Image (cartoon, rainbow, N blue to C red; front, side, top):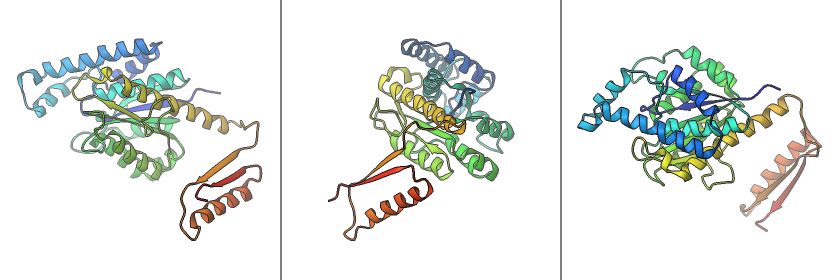
Length: 302
């Protein structure tokens, strides 16, 4: 069985990696063996990006539009923005879980004005992936413009939307403080992806950030200092990869050695028992389609 493929999509206007830089990022991540080495790499690379901003005019108090214009005159193959660092962290975990990894900076395809650049290559990369990981900075409790453009790009193409259905999705959000809107951002992204037919997963059991990666980085270059956020990104990348592997096993004819058992817990219901009837009808329908599945309903309300 061939390796599953996980695509990381970084959705920040501060992105440093494009084209060859994205390719080298994947190669660099694959060479990292331990979390300690990963943290050291992130410290080094995010500092490079912070220095880039200072050299572009941030140190002299230049307006941000001038700083961005100065940065965009170059295409870097080094450095990481905070959102890219989150993506790199999740991709590292996906690779350690056995996945083939790749990266795209969304600013490469979605300019501030005008049509999408190279839509065919972006669509081809999305189709080729078994799972995608999308990172975004937090703007007032919601995702940034680049992540939103990606969702609109998929939704506006019926053929692409159909091909993306069933792929595994995981989200990462980077906010200025610990409770800075990361989870609402992830919930909005998750709902969008679910509505387009993707299979959205959250984090692993190792952290309490159940909707995905929740990193804290108030300034350029500070991602690596948030060890908790780093762990949430690792958990998300690992879970995307593992879920994609399980899905591919099913696609290749693998099956469970035992019967599938599903337990439904009903913790609250209406007076007329509408919730219980809904559960029971769903269980009956599932049993009619596959009698080997065992469904049990626990009515905790009683």
